[in-house]
Image 1 (cartoon, rainbow, N blue to C red):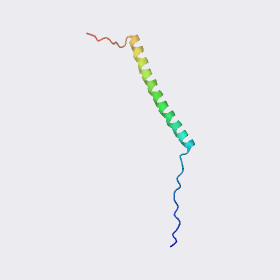
Image 2 (cartoon, rainbow, N blue to C red):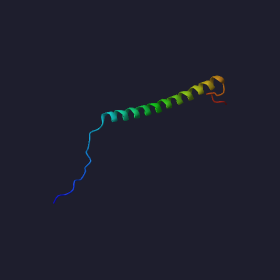
Image 3 (cartoon, helix red, strand yellow):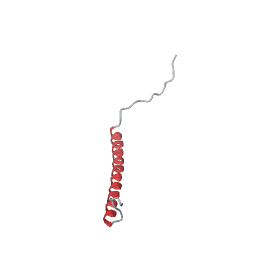
Image 4 (cartoon, helix red, strand yellow):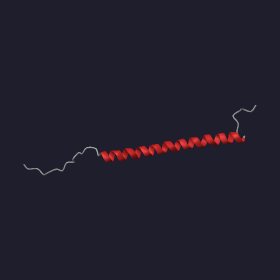
Length: 63
């Protein structure tokens, strides 16, 4: 009995260029998000000290 030919998927190894591109992209996105987080924290801290200098807020509890 002669059976028909079945096309099997050929497994290839990992593509080095593709892996490098994916890693680079993920690294840049994660780094950008981390940097944006730090910029926001820096902005909050700067605005706190600006308000403290202007006398708009105080860190001393009023009695």
